[in-house]
Length: 92
Image 1: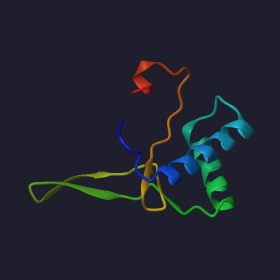
Image 2: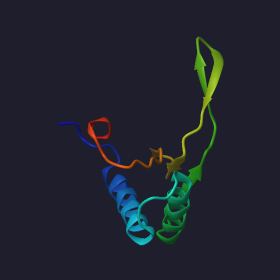
Image 3: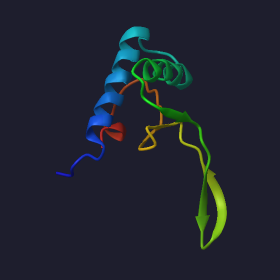
């Protein structure tokens, strides 16, 4: 089994996400949950950035940019997703 990097921070993030979901429920768009996470991160004094841009290069040339939904404590990337049901595609 692989050791989880930034385990304590990841547990805090998951806890925040669970609080947000418990409070507002299901069925909203990704942006709604992202905004809820921002409120919870602020409440718990967890730093984050939203949609910062990072260049992607290949052979020394910038070919694109990567824009993650959120980066927490400059350590963990979050990509918010909403789905109707969880299936094998999401469990790996």
